Amino acid sequence: MKRICPKPIRWSEAFNRLTEYAQSHPCDPPSPPIPLILAGWAFSNDIDKKERWEQTVAWAEKNGCADLIAGIPDSDFYYAKEPTNYVVGPLGGPMYLPWDYESKIRPSFDQLAQLMEKLISQWSEIAGDELARVTRPLAFTGKKARRLLVQADADAVPPWGGWSYLSREESKRRTFTRFRAAVNRAIAPHEVDHIDFVVEPVLPAKPSKS
Image (tube, rainbow, N blue to C red; front, side, top):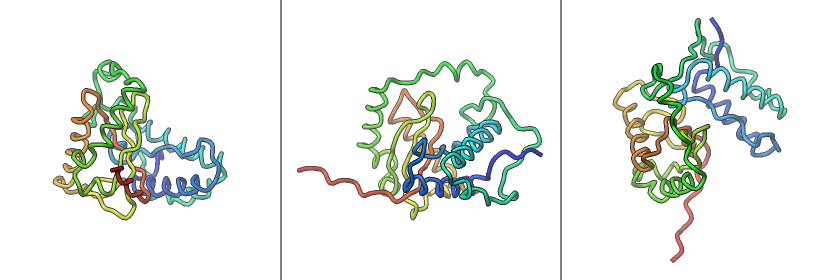
């Protein structure tokens, strides 16, 4: 069995510790690599996960905080006998037509800015009032901007289970699927395959000027 990366909950906890460290220390790059958890876990293969964790370890070592992730027990790591390396498609399985995936074009900087402005201005309608109170969209990331980074309140619990994992109950998992679908409807024809959450206190929205 080959060790791949921490299981989602432990990876999320490690990322939060590194993020807190980065907020009080000068780091290069300024933030640790985004963990492949939640949708990122479902839509990445084992090699992707292993490489992202190795990048996280390298970041921690470079910035003098490797001790923050050194104590994760072996039982909290994900192992695979034969790590997968196929391109993951939109349903979470192998993408047998990789040229369809690769044909996606990254929107321009101005287009992404307009899409983010739309998400921010319509977030209550997209996410729903309750979820919008504890989250806010931050940025599109990834090579083709097909990942959405969202800030989430550490004290809140999402309807699908947690910010770094999905509930075992299918009805709850579907709430995340509907959430991502609502995001994609708002930014169509562009769409995101992953939504990553940065868990920290969410600042209150600034009051609009009258």
